[in-house]
Length: 131
Image (tube, rainbow, N blue to C red; front, side):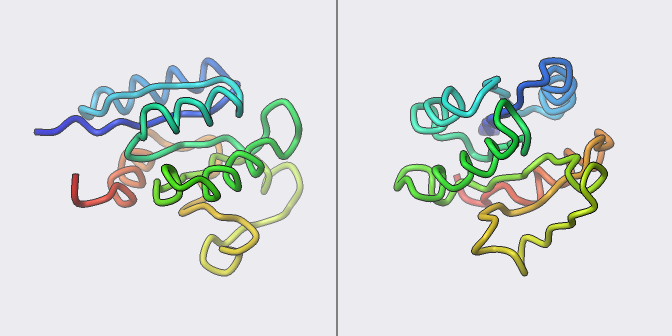
């Protein structure tokens, strides 16, 4: 079995560790970055199979900026992005990845907090089938 790599970009170290334990328990390799700049470097260097990206880090929209940059780079353009967000709770805004695809270039929005089983199911749903 080929180990699939998941990059988690989030400044909440406790949440990153929860995600790591959850995904590593399911056989995934997890790498992480606590800011967008490091996340972009890791994405280009490691070419993960999937990226879990927080919306709000440092600057309020840093996650969106990182998502746009990932989609503009040849080597990371096709990597699925699952965006973690508490934005709906905090602002009342809701996002639909299909309807808002041009504005928000991610594959799925995940509301925080996310149940471990739901997270694993969403990761598997969006992983590329060919390796």
